[in-house]
Image 1 (cartoon, rainbow, N blue to C red):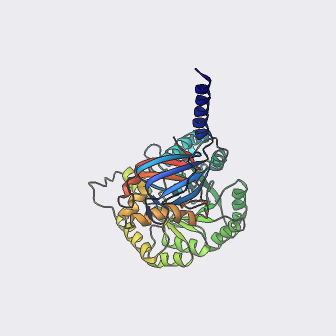
Image 2: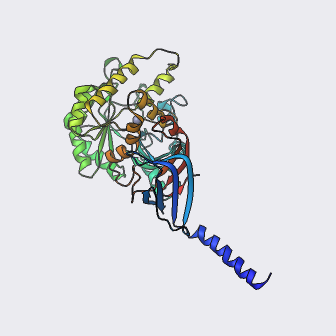
Image 3: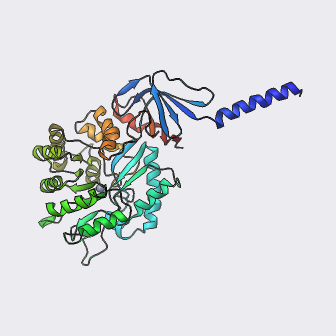
Amino acid sequence: MNRTLKIFLVFFLCNIFSRYTSAQYTLLKPDRVFDGESILEGWSVLIKQDKIEAIGKTLKIDSVHTVIVDLKGTTLMPGLIEGHSHILLHPYNETVWDDQVLIESVAERVIRANNHLRASLKAGFTTLRDLGTEGSQYADVGIRQAIEKKIILAPDLICAGPAIVATGSYGPNKFNFKTPQGADEADANNLIQVVRNQIGHGVDLIKIYVDFRWGPFGKAMPTFSIEEIKTVVETARSSGRDVVAHATTREGMRRATLGGVSTIEHGDEGNLEIFKLMKEHKVAWCPTLAAEEANLYYRGWNKKQDPQPEYIKNKKITFKAAQQAGVQIIFGGDVGVYTHGDNARELLLMEEYGMSPLQILQSATSGNAEVFHLQDRGRIKEGYLADLIAVKGDPIKQLNHIYQVELVMKRGVKFQ
Ligand SMILES: [Zn+2]
């Protein structure tokens, strides 16, 4: 090989090498962008490290330091934000809740959680608000710390720790003796201490159960008084944390709203009056439709063949009342009751119950980010985190495309 050829080869190889090693930017070129608010046809997104550098139809790029990713045939969106998960639970038709809480070791549950997180991220869910470890104490906080240390690439977690219940109002409860419970018990005399103890363990928010099936004949009835709820909220708020409430009864929802919680989970008995009260107090509603349907499947209901159970008919009326009242509806399916990674099941049900795909995807991105005070994500916007997904086709035209995820990026790093 002569000298000129050698020099040329070295130069050529160095050029290729530097292109791939010193690439500081990634340009994503989908057919369209859903920025968390609306569809932008023909737009591209430029990423620098873990953040969005620019977004637009024609972007100026430094061709030497930019890797171009062709995403033809897809819609690029913000990573989805699950509003109600339990990564330390798995479907109840695999193992009933009591046995998960009492028999499975925390080690087994954490190892399962690792799989659950992987499945969630693969499906496009880059942040999860996880609402209760159900007997695994603060395992969620430990997992969140492992994610922050980059030990695993997983969705970000917003953790509730063990959750708080009124004494005697939770489970497991079908034994003749008191077993360890799936949440921390507390009442008026020690609520402040229990809330502060959870804060000290590193939870991001406090979850309380303001009602439970502890009435006569197993009827759902309220637990905490408004005063008790106010005590929890005041204690949590002074540390900068929100309180979320499990509530299925109308009275539970009313007390939680007046007590100052930020979101109400389930809300089965909500009506126009309650939802208007919630709107007035800026309380958002998380309907958890998918978990409730899953529980009916586990009891033998076949959606394709069987008539609609009363419960579903009523929940559809509740959903309409919430829309009519204009309360903010957040996306959260209570995943864990059903399979992790199948989070989008809730999105499709929100459409079946009466929301448009655009409203649903706004809820799962910018809407949830706003309610959960996540100012760095949920939108494709300059300076926001590069937590992005590309799905086939246009999910605003056909929502079930949300299942066809072709790219998942967390902090600018491609997953898989
Ligand atoms: Zn739940």
